[in-house]
Image (cartoon, rainbow over all chains, first blue to last red; front, side, top):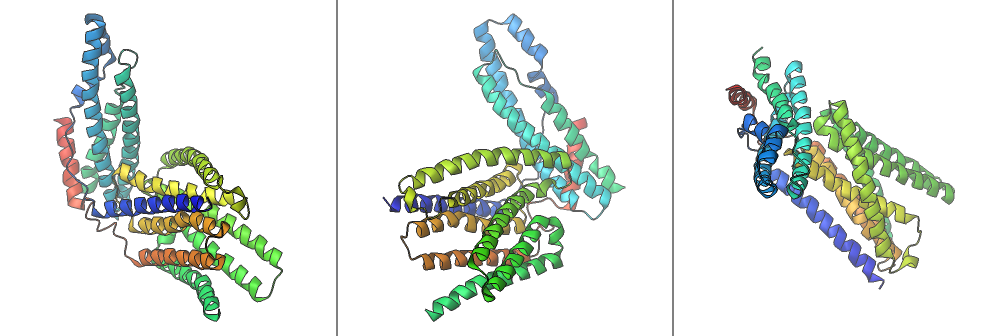
Amino acid sequence: MVMIPVIALATAAAAFLLFIAYQVWWQSGKATEIELSPVDLEAFRNLTDPEEVRFLRANLSAREFRKIQRMRLRATGAYISVISQNAGRLVVIGRSMSAQADAGTAAAGHDVVNRAVQLKLWCSLSLLKLKLTMIFPTLLSPSSRIADRYLDVSSLSASLPKKLAA
Amino acid sequence: MISLHFIGLYLWVAPHALLALVAALMLRNGRHREFPVFFAYLLFEILQFCVLFLMLRFDWHISSYKDVDLLGRAGSIAFRFGIIQEMLEVSVARCAPLRQTIARMLWCVAAVLALLALIFIGSVYSWSVRGMIVPAYAIDQTLNILQCGLLACVCLWHRFLGLKMRSFVVGIVLGMGLVAGLEPLLHALKDLRTVNPQSVDLLRMGVYHVSVLIWLYFASVQEEFASDSAAPSFPDARNWAVELRRFLWS
């Protein structure tokens, strides 16, 4: 009986240290892709347009609507995953810019990092919400605000070359 | 016995002398500006050691020594939480709203983890409640487990963002993780008298020594951030941004 706490704590300590070691190893071996995946924002907006949802709901039977809406939600999820990946890459590019000696470029880089992090958090929350929406497709609908946020951070990132050239 | 005494003295003095070296390296590399809380923690540990060493040297009253030791432990724990927050914020250091968001997230995660850690410690010691020499140490153990959870969050946060951890952050995580991860186990070994308590004390100091050596190594390593192979180079980033603008506005 006396050994039970020791065994439990030894197991927990070993598991934790292995986890930390794995994370450090994973970080050291990781090479970040710098290719951005294209995102068709118009199609994304269309998928998340409340008017479209209302139109489909009015013209389809409840069963068909649920089926179609689930397919649309899967496509929306795929778009959000790509936006999330791109946001991660924007964090890397922003971080790279923020290390530049020029104060203006560094500040712009910080701005990109901060907005991209917010976008990434937003994407994660949206993916969670989307999973809920998949269960209740008639009650919930996805938000299209991610597209605006993505455009916001992407256009900021796209304005960097002007700043770099200046 | 004499050799054990010297080993004990070495394991007490050497890590703190090395901490001074870590602090000096941080000052030289300018990292004290990037990691002010960690730097303050190093100074606090050195100061605490100096006070305790002098108290022991001049045969101060044992109760005063214990009070100072307890105060020092409490301060160290507080500092370690600050360091964890600092590591989470290092990637978004210039954005106040985002820092506030991270702080809020940290508090929520910490509250949940504290509850889980308390349940874990409670269930582990439920087999042998009397085994715990000082029940108040349950709080210390809970906080150590909480710190382990938060250190895991630091790794997961960087993974979530797709960022490589700064080499110095890796060093801090490894060092703190080693101490916080093994501390509950060492506490249990001592409390339940399964191993000679003196050996456990030596083991604890040895673990701390190893963690200080890890900090020393990572403090001496040149920051890989500038030459990070994973991060895009300056022309890469520029081309990338041009490409982005092309497909955004086409």
